[in-house]
Length: 241
Image (tube, rainbow, N blue to C red; front, side, top):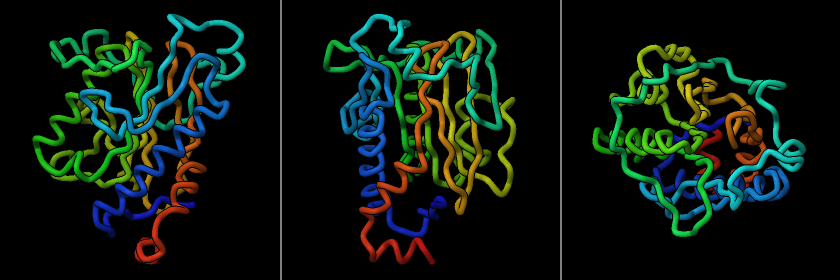
């Protein structure tokens, strides 16, 4: 199923889909995709990200045993499928110090976040500055991030969200593929795996990193399709025009 043009419907309709998609992603991760000891939670307040973020957590200090090997992909053996791969200088984020700490109500450690952007994330300068602050805060704390942006660039991110998160060394997205799928590995040096996409294209699997050596491929396309089933027919007809 190709990506739809969500700018054609009110923000509340995308929010309805957004909540369903995050839940589908969580269900899929928890249904055997993650190694033992890891779990995903949707709709959990994880400051400073807010209520619509999917958190990946573990109750294990480290996990390098057989469970990790069986249910994740080794980075060196099978690099993620992404057209743009970047590695930062060690000091790239040094200027972004004193970031807000991301904490969780439970004692379990947050490993990674999945963030599906909504129109409100890019609706104004304050909103996009807040988003960037959250992203940098997570990466500064060693929290990996999978970011999904199915909305075209705005005056706040005219060259795409990845160039704002990374820096001007990030390549410009193709003019005909302005949407962004980006996986950030919060290691030193930091790495970004970016896949430009567009309305009308199917989504590819994207990596969700567990540590410096392992990731799980997140099935964006199948979970998108599952969430699409719950969109009201009234609005499906608009999106399918």
